Length: 324
Length: 255
Image (tube, rainbow over all chains, first blue to last red; front, side, top):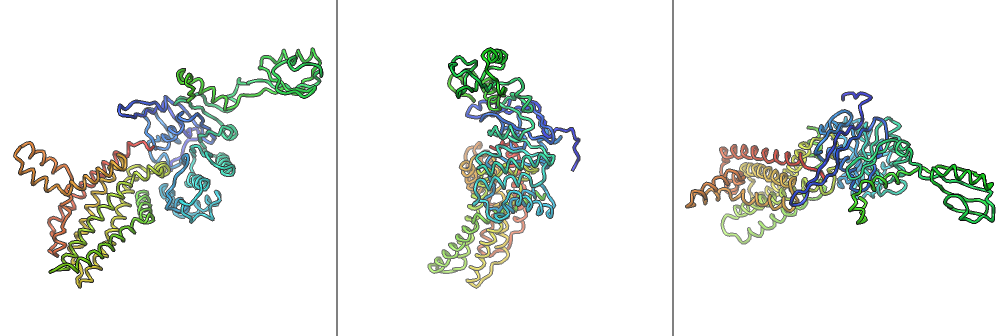
């Protein structure tokens, strides 16, 4: 196994384009449009976008399930067209399906053989992973009788079987119960702590916000932004929240400065635009109102995504009420 | 090659656990029962009639199973999306196709073996043990199934199961009529028709080259000359069709 320079990106995508042709007239549909993306080694990278944005298409190209129409993709410094590039990659598809006739132990052995792992190492690794995803008790039960959560756990185990340096997960928490989601989160963070790179797509924006070192937003096949949460949300303070007290009891609600969120006697919470803070403080001083707390409320990843979708949605589609 | 054998082993294991083999056993028992009934109503060489029915049944059932398994070979992987986690491993697609194919051939060898064992048991009941020509004819049946399965693999990699089934069945039927195309083509009045028949004869597979059923039923000597050419023909044609299947699958987007 060759060594990789430390500064080699885990994933490097340049000018990636995917055009699908469908129907009798082979009409073209652009799935990905000149996508450029770089994922650094050792980071957790969140990949978000609405349905149909091209997330799964990108992932399928990365792992060799789809052919790119144009562009270059490198995984850990090797072209993704070379099957050997996947020897250090673990992949968990959305809603994983496995051979129902196999048991979890047999499945891990089969996948390990595809990595040409040493039989002894494979056996030890399989047992450790079954233990890690809490499936040792069910290791010899055919997968056909597994629940969805159990299949996802087997999926995680097979993703990690060859100790991959790069882990690619497509919607890993989709449809899981809280315990399943917690397990996925733990695995992602533990792998990151072990120095591995994790690239995952998700609709669960809270997971993306809390786990990702960097995030990218994809809408209609185009990249809308990449960066850390701070970088993406910089300058996007939505409003400022003021917690007020000592408001004269006889002061009517409509006389209070800003947009009143709630009031209880002499205390209230108001929101205002970021540029209205100076006027609000002046008003407070004038009426003897105390400012207990001033909180800038930052835009969320959700608002960022919705704004990106809004920008990319054609006028006709907006008129028809279609977002993406 | 380790990966090819891993895929082949998994395919064989899937076929065995899918209980496909049990259907063969069922048909084997059916053939056995049918031949015993036939024996009761036959005048003359009863053993020969039993041999003829049993050989024909083995040929037919083995071909049906080969088509059935061959068509579902790649399609089932795509439909059940099991292929996602397999092809995302460092497994070149050609190794996946060849591995699946070899696994299926191993399944067919096991099935033909079971049918042959039943046949031997049946003939032993008639106080005769099959001569070597019977075993050679089974070997040629495997060669025929190898070609038929390669076609099924090609069609299932390229199209839907229904289309693949229609094409594979067509190839099977036409392949057994190849000699007739040659004979009738030569009798045609129009030179153009004769030429078309000649092109079809050479382009389409000829499954009759694998048949030494007459020799096996009548316990005639092994036709060594035909055996060599049939195996060479089968190996060449099967490799070419399998190569086509690999080329189709290499370019396929896995949905």
